[in-house]
Amino acid sequence: MLGVRVDCVDMTSALRRIESLVEAGGHHLVATVNPEFVMRAHSDREFARALDSADLCLPDGSGVVWAARRQGCEMQGPVTGTDLIPPLADLCARREWRLFLLGAGPRVAADLAARLKAQHPALEVAHHEGSAEPSADDETVRVVAEHRPHVLLVAFGAPKQELWIERAGRRIEVPVAIGVGGAFDYLTGRVPRAPGWMRRAGMEWLFRLVRQPWRLRRMAVLPVYAARVLTER
Ligand code: UDP
Image (cartoon, rainbow, N blue to C red; front, side, top):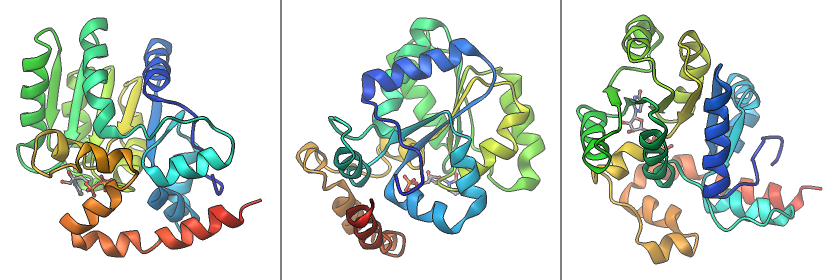
């Protein structure tokens, strides 16, 4: 999409792909691509390179789904990090895979880990607030590596989380690392999510904008994104 990879997947096939990436071992990056990612990749080469190296790019947001449908992809709807985490935790519990939650604000990852553990008592889940600053890399890598996770969720926001995974995450043997943005905040109720009808109508962005007006600067790229999608050949 405008030079950025987006995989034509729904939730079921995304989970299947993640399952086979974990089974394959090694190190894989999964990105949750929204229109802001696409636009940023045009001006930020380091971020574009990180996205290029991703093994799976999930369609995160109605703007990406709209553009994908124009290209003939029969997508039911977005596959967001927030929607992915509960079934992914279920998968990890069933397969006895260790899950690690990294990032977000104070106590957020700890809170989410406790909630997931309550829902899946068999789940092995660890957490660390950490920091996206390169000066913290050694410490963060040490803490995460100690738990030997199969799946690592990184909530530092884009592009920090993808750059962290490329720079520091590669030093850890973690089969799947996923940048999940503000998903921990939504799943712990710290930030309210748009009601279901608004999400289904592809209006989640409007709800976020009203609740978090500081997003306006970031969202200013959206009309340019839409114009480029409409004129893309
Ligand atoms: N965050 C962080 N460290 C940072 C910057 C952000 O842990 O240096 C967290 C922040 O607390 C939030 C998430 O990263 O939980 C990013 O949220 P944002 O709403 O920006 O992500 P989006 O969902 O828009 O991608």
